[in-house]
Image (cartoon, rainbow over all chains, first blue to last red; front, side, top):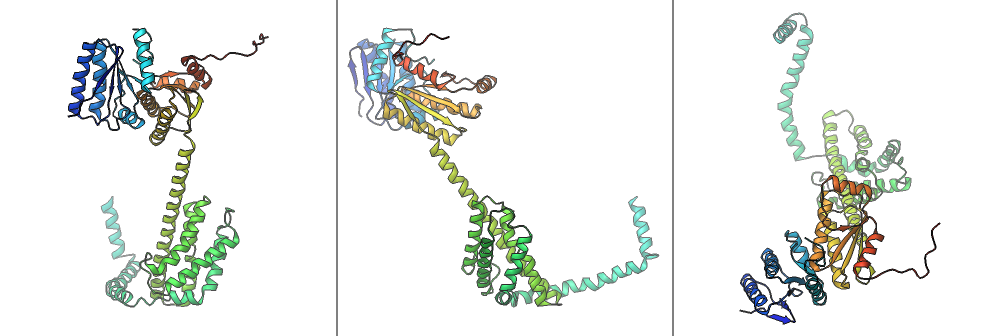
Length: 129
Length: 336
């Protein structure tokens, strides 16, 4: 079974989802990621889903869960590169992922994580609640 | 009350008003046997031969019929709308009658969807289409066919003469035929109108969803017209597509041109904003008119997004978020 690599950049972790997500892979990613956040003492998690074409409610919930788990472990989660079709699908499914921060690309995502780490408890960049 | 009346009537019938009662009775006795005995053989005979004179009548008297019909249409006010010219009405009528003559020659009047009636249908379709395009009413269009009845029946009466049964048969055949053709005209008219409406809808959809780049990283989406589900979908898609293409972080949705905001429109707006946020772009809603602000509060709607009264305010906020400032090149003159 393919494994989704978790890369470390400074105090951030980068996950790039390049294959079709199925449920077991998603569960494994949650496992890996929480372990790595604790192990590497990471402050930020960036999930790149620019290659993800198909989403369902399970994947949507997984993204939400990862964000919530990271928050508990005091790390900021940013989802980057979501495709328009995926965004529309998630909204139609009623999953607007209000707890997850988003950015257009990896560059902007990193800047957002920096901002959030440097300004903890502050404006948190975007003002959604 | 009823029983008294009944009694009275019985009394009248038995006694005083005997002559009319008996006349009525005789009428019934004269008619009642004739209905069952005569109708069935007549029906069979009709089904067998159907020797209608319609084809030859249309053949021989086409010119008179056309003249009568045209005169009648004009007196009935076919030209009064000013949409149809004299020449066009004459041409339409001539073509229809000619096609009718051709189709009637085959002697088949039951099924107007048959290939033999193709020419007639084509003539009617043309009339329907041109009238639908000019905004005439369905009745004005169907009347074109129905108005033929009067001159045609007149002509039939002249030809058939005194034979009442024959005349009734002829008129029945003619009226069935013209009714079918009239309904066909109305159907085509309806279809044409629907096509026109569908085309206009498509054009409107394409026309009204431009996404404008205001600045590096700032998009504007001026919405004009009512937001229904279909339009929201188009608007959402084009906005998200443009966010990907331009890498813009801020999108200003301007609703100055949206006439009313109800819960449904608000929901559509919220969806669009949520989808843009998922992609990593922030939305600002601008162009909220005073009445709309009141409506939003009265309906208890929560847009959950930064909103500004005007596009200028929204743009200023967008620039501030991007870390830009607008500076006067000359110091502003002191206001008087």
